[in-house]
Figure 1 (cartoon, one colour):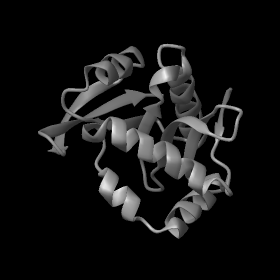
Figure 2 (cartoon, helix red, strand yellow):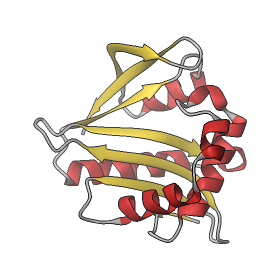
Figure 3 (cartoon, rainbow, N blue to C red):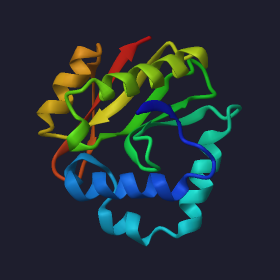
Length: 163
């Protein structure tokens, strides 16, 4: 298994892992399983092609199981306007791969990529009640910004860390 960027031809592989994430932990995301299932297949292909382009300030890092399936994801984007802060989202690791360091590797890959794009730091949104994710993000240096946004249940909290 290894961490790498999503490839342009892996739209449906990304769809499969995203659907698992939405099915198993629906409260953690801003999209519902029903919404993702309704997305046309071309959307997934287009997304994969766009984040695979090395010249695009968006990337999707994946945990490649080595058998044609993906076991984790972390999306990153870097703003093209100053101060060029990065944003992260769609963090997921399949339950059978948790506590093995793969989430740390995904975070390291995405933060390293954002830093190379010139981001001084990165933000992300934490769904309410997700204590495991909160402990993980704290371990990686994230702190609350004070910004809140409506979530599926309650309010999501914005977190930030310097790179």
